[in-house]
Length: 226
Image 1 (tube, helix red, strand yellow):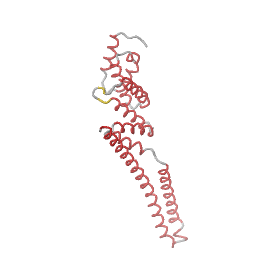
Image 2 (cartoon, rainbow, N blue to C red):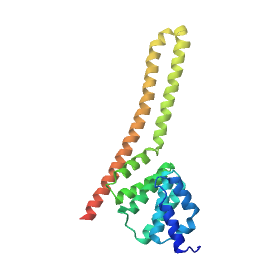
Image 3 (cartoon, rainbow, N blue to C red):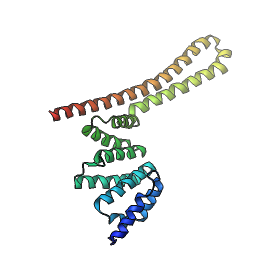
Image 4 (cartoon, one colour):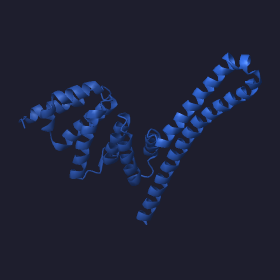
């Protein structure tokens, strides 16, 4: 590691802190250009800069880098036994934002696992429960794809029946016109039913799973607090 004089360390830290907190790209650029010097700072200053940098990565949607830094900070927090930072539960914050990055990267199963752990530790976290429900919703079960396939199949058959009604039935089989109209209406209804029932069932199952997990976590918390 390069050696930095205390005056240089102070200048690095002061310049970093002078950047606007909402200038995420500026924070990222400065940190990455001066990473060796920031690593040489005292622990509290290094942690302060690295937390700000990691949050800037998240806010600028650089979720891949954010995951790497989240793992580093989580390891640091655990090793140094840091409970709170600036009045905030640091472990909770880091873990939740890691799950959010995984969610934005569409790694829904990994996000779900972390969110379940968050709820297990913090059962009152309504935002984690909301994200858990959303992560479950994006994980489509096989039966839902079959329901969607049935929707398409019913719709295609209905199109064929309607085409026959227009092109062939009135001329060659006029007596079948009314039954075929009933048939195509039924097919359209089945198509819409397959879609709506399938999606609604999936949404209900996800909601019930989330609610059950939160309830179990709260019950365990109550038992442990006794």
